[in-house]
Amino acid sequence: MARLSTHILDTAKGRPAAGVEVRLCDSSRQTLKTVTTDSDGRALVDENLMAGVYELVFAVHASEFLEDVVVRFRIAEGDARYHVPLLISPFGYTTYRGS
Image (tube, rainbow, N blue to C red; front, side, top):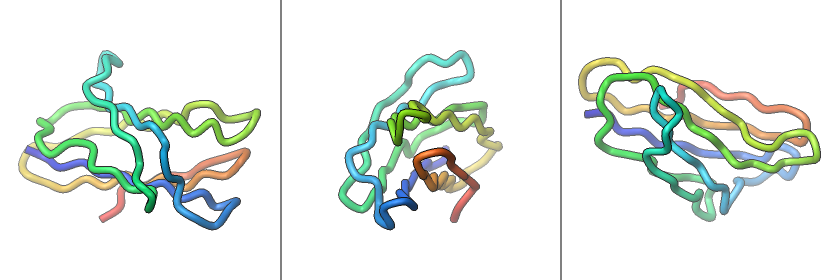
């Protein structure tokens, strides 16, 4: 089973994005779990994910431009730790597989 966590940084404000709702969805876009980032912008999403395709939907509402940010990714076979950071600004974002 894989472990999935996330961390959101607001690069415009230079600090973590606290209180952001993050939804974990399966490949058919059904919500499996909803979490909220803590005061450090972090959240443990799930500790028991099986191999497959998932989405993290970040309800950033960062500006009049961005509403939700959707990151679709694959969990490979075996025990692994997946960390999906999100760097957000009013008009863009970036993500990557962290450690």
